[in-house]
Image (tube, rainbow, N blue to C red; front, side, top):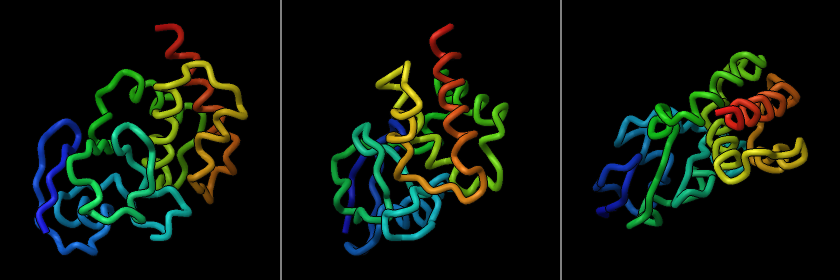
Length: 155
């Protein structure tokens, strides 16, 4: 089945079987490595990306469902000033350990800060609740997002 969509601002067409997940299509057919395969049930957030600007678990979306949609992965955000500040805050606050959850966590954090540049700790918790991190205990991630919000406010 042919799927036409926009990936990180570029038009894309991929021919995949209709039962292919968005995660598999991006990783296997398009070499997008920031989208991780974790639980494959929409529970861990490792595969989180933006579909038409909203964070979603790509493992529970079939590739044909993104026909005509805009998909944004971490690769598509890497040069955005807000993502640069967010990554730096993650690094400086010790919010990255093994790194497996980091791409999905950064996508969820980015979506929050894009829409709310002065979130409360509870709003950060709500924004990242679909992402599981087995290493950090979440405190450092929350601190990193709040630090990034402060950096963005100064710019």
